[in-house]
Length: 298
Image 1 (cartoon, rainbow, N blue to C red):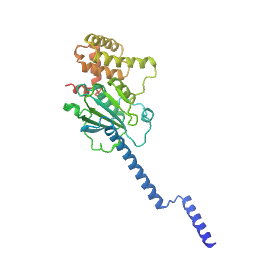
Image 2 (image 1 turned 60 degrees about the horizontal axis):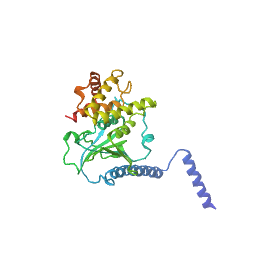
Image 3 (image 1 turned 135 degrees about the vertical axis):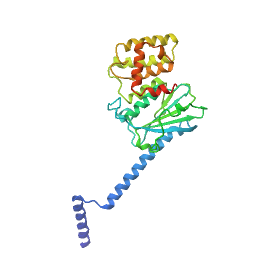
Image 4 (image 1 turned 180 degrees about the vertical axis):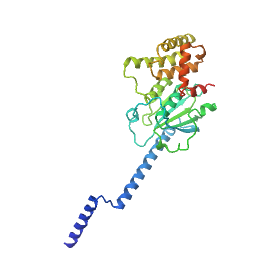
């Protein structure tokens, strides 16, 4: 009985200590250790997620990692909305959301490089360039197209997005996002639509959304891949639209402007474009995001 009373007394004393806000140092140490273990597990999960992108896919024969960079956020971001990555891409605690793009160096995806610059204004982006063994050589400007190597590139848990560009001998650009489902997105236009949604929501007005999509189709099917007559018609339409508004889909820059600018540039049509189009090209280049794409063609 005395022993029972002594145990009960100790129990009451412990409860009293907890009520006074005192915590056993051993409990504190255990909690700190648990937090450290969880942090390391999340970091390991992020690393495994990234490795799975290049090891468990058909791109497993990557033979050269060229550059890895961190592009930090700028205080003068063009898009300042509150786009929620969890809402757009799904919540995956501890894993880096990694976007992997296969592109042919003979046809550099200028729109994606411009969008990459814009994404770096909004998010902490881990950018990496690889060269696939199917490609014998890549021009230096394409090897460094996503920026210089950053010293923290090995710490994947520090970033919000992974942007991996693989120069590969492919007939059409392809993007892979989900490791588990491995559902690819084919074509530069479709990948550009995906990436732009990470910057700004799709226009809620059906007419405006249709207008943007129409200009994106015009950019790739007429300006980039069309005949000389189709290209000339598209340039006249651009001139007419830009005579009514500073940008193609209204008062603000949109995916329509990004796509059309890059395709006009890549097709070599800029010198012969109408005056309105040349002024619009200058306006795009004044923003800074587009000038990098221009240097890749020089």
